[in-house]
Image (cartoon, rainbow, N blue to C red; front, side, top):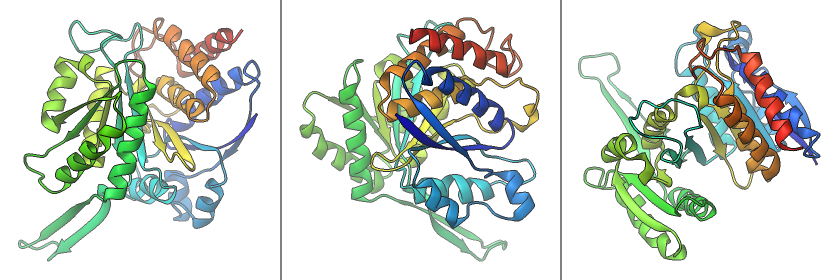
Length: 354
């Protein structure tokens, strides 16, 4: 099987970590009877500064023809915040209808967590975040901009269709997991009595279709407490766009930091995109200090999504074995440089397939 994959290395340390992910994918390709055709796109801050282009329509059309998109990082210190995030990242999600943001929160063996007395058995859950609606839909505007009477309005857009398809994906994710088949809806029904009410009613209506899944509800503020106090309570969490953005960063910290946190922007019927969530880290560019495990884990997620479970499991085994040998997950404190960490994962992943 040959997979055509669009690669967007992006900004800062993005190209460095993507190179290690590609290295690992190539390492498992032969033993797993796979082949990859990688096509690179120079989207990001450098292209924008040189040409003024962010995401041409022609590129969107091309990306729709690939099996998946592998993204490094977007964010450039010389580009005003919001330009690349809205014009590239959000537009990719919207144009490719990647309506699920999937964030595994996994504590690998040997990785330190700031949570006292918690280990890999306690921190192993998935957050399913709605990815194309909510406050990120961009509905709103200004009145009397720049004056003392200025008004800013930003509306959260939640459709029954958008909520239902996100919930369906979350219920089916819970069905596939062996941890407990439990799905927790996170919202704020006591205050956000319109949007959260829609989510809760849709959740309750869908639950009888999945009798093997235990359902639960938690306010978003309580969820932040329980992620820290009792992460073992969670199996699959489903929530809206904004709440999901916030709680997944908390999830990243309890799993050991941004260096190990990967995510997927999923269109189950179309083209999905996979990325490390830590950002471009421009201060480390070219120093080979940044941890590539998150980018490698994103490549693993991509293989899982493509149905290549054996190769994905081999990469996960390589990540786990490598993680036990690193001194830290933080950039510059791993005990190895970026390339060396990629070499280790590639070696162990290939060995897992023999």
